[in-house]
Image (cartoon, rainbow, N blue to C red; front, top):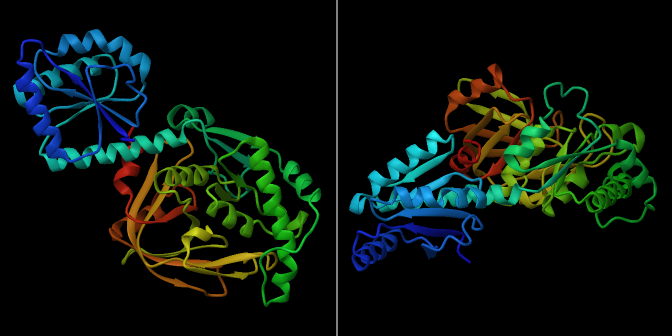
Amino acid sequence: MAQTAIFTLTSELHDEQAVDAVTKDFLGSLGIDHAFKGSDYTDYGTHTLNLIFVRTGGTEGIFKGLFPLLREKSARPFYLLTSGKSNSLAASMEILSYLRENNLRGEIIHGKPEYIASRILLLEKAEGARKKMNGCRLGIIGKPSDWLISSHADCGIVKQRLGIELVDIPMHRLLDTIAAIPEELPGESSDREIIRKSLPGADRIYQALRAIIDQQRLQGFTLRCFDLLNTVKNTGCLALAKLNSEGFVAGCEGDVPAMLSMKIIHSITGLSGFQANPSAIDPETGEILFAHCTIPLNMVERYEFDTHFESGIGVGIRGYMKTGAVTIFKVSGDLSRCFIAEGTLVRNQSKPDLCRTQQVIQLSDKSQAHYFLTNPIGNHHIIVPGCWKSVLEEILAE
């Protein structure tokens, strides 16, 4: 089913057959999949992207009459598509001015067919991502780790702008759930005895987190994972790697902004992204080394088990992601700031004195390296394969 629906505004003063012919040629030149709704606005607002095609001039009054109904049906911005024929651009500008006077957002989509098509496809991706996030429940299991002194979130703003509900879950609930799960032989194995002995416990953490996801109806969570080191003598690295690959967002250290960044990324790409922190930065070349002890298993070509770096216990993941284009992303907890950079994963490495998954990334714009040294949004950032800067900017533009 088409994600984009096109509704029309047409003045009765214009010849209907002539307008229909222009419409057919114009929409055909765009080459986009769409559902043509004409002047029937019954299901306006129910599609991923709802476009109002201003076909002629003299339609301002028609729009004003429809306006109360349209506002009731959708709170999204008004996207006014126009070919420029029959004074349609002038009418679109008058309509957009009216919307601005009413403190509402809108945009005229106009230009060459190639530009219009690319703009519609970008808006479709962004609106689709918003739709996926709306109504999501993300858990905060335990509070953010003590060292994450700037990694909290404004629940009200997150709910208002992204439609995401943040759910506080006490750490004892996870620990009680782990204690109630019998230890069994896991599906994974290792040649190293220290890891082999830790795998059953790591599997219990995975099962407990999966149970909490079901109980709380979560689409994801962030975990105060370092508390597990002293309580169950294990780590959540393997559990997070598996849950992320199963379609949930699973973040580390109770970092709420990082979890939100992962959820935004997931809504676009279907991947949670690699939550990592910079371990070394070359501000002159724009090369950055990122590292962490877990990575979604569906993001790597292969992986190995190791111990958790800081503690030397449990099960950490050393993942090797395919080299190539990547995007680095982070949003602040009140959604007032974001960092987006595109670059290239030039190599994976496996030095023993770092968190186990290690990626060396060359920024496309080396000057962006200074952000990490002068104005960072916390330490964790999210890395995902591909180039997603434009759609991320669109989602966070409001």
